[in-house]
Image (cartoon, rainbow, N blue to C red; front, side):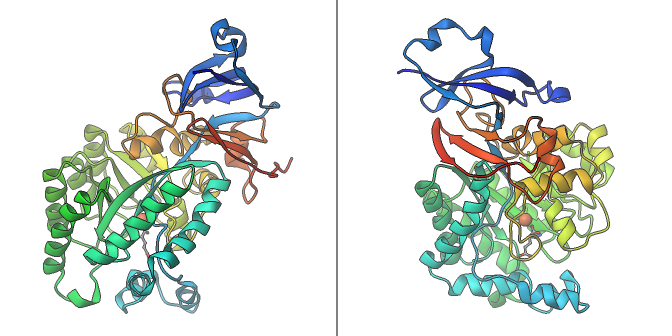
Length: 412
Ligand code: NIG
Ligand code: FE
């Protein structure tokens, strides 16, 4: 097989241990062989063998980063909740609305009524926005169906989106997201039903991981553990919506099950952070939800740093707490609200986000990684976190294939 070379670029490789300068290579080159990178480094060091018969692409001084990874989304759902946004601006809180039967439950109703084709159509619109910003891998959670048939319907839509687009999608089963109306006041019975859904969904090839919402408007520690036990029995990795509204000791629990990630974490304490560090669990920060529900308590970033818990950033794209499809905006908000450095933030949407999905073959630019990368109309990676509301993504390569070349430009 012949090689393809990309040169005339500045590379931000994001290789581990080189975060202090983003792994920058000023005059860099990438060599692609099939779906993978065969070589990455300074252009002048490139072994001559690669040039032989290679197709050459001129990156025209673009900055090249690894493809972006959005490791926490709820992209497939029916309807939207702009009406609840209005209610909140008239005095109701996110929790008030959830307790009054709105919130997740109203999206469940709309999702159950929607056909697979309708769900596909709306999710595709949201996916397009992510792709246009250089996302090459994302996670999609279920959790708005809450019955075997409706969860399967949403997960099939996610699989179909992956088939039809040049993108990798990881499916996560989030049956334990809320109690559906037919189980009202019977949350234990619902958890038994969730546990029973995992095996058939896995058998249909629809899930790659299992998640739950452990909180005072979600499920208890004991209920969450039941779900994790079944996931473990079936060799499925787990993750958790943990300590978003309260500290429910979810991070400690998830760590005991070797969770890939704990997400949200505004109320995380030292015990939870230490447990995550021991288990190698990633902290997924969701500045969109933090912003949109006007949370005032910040996730304990300094504690996470002290315990060396890796931090990822994601959109949490969903109709209730984060109707957002811009991972670049999250990069900026992680810096402004949560005080991450731009280099922590960029690692958080590339290398660490891949780690949060258990994927070892992407998220950095180096040999043997997937040939997933983005060309940006910026000269330094800090600009990606600095500017907000614009999109400097010029072109994206996924699995060695050029996915799109856009007319986007930077603002400077
Ligand atoms: O990640 N925390 C729970 N789930 C979602 C919100 C879902 C919704 O409000 O529809 C989240 O924030
Ligand atoms: Fe979420």
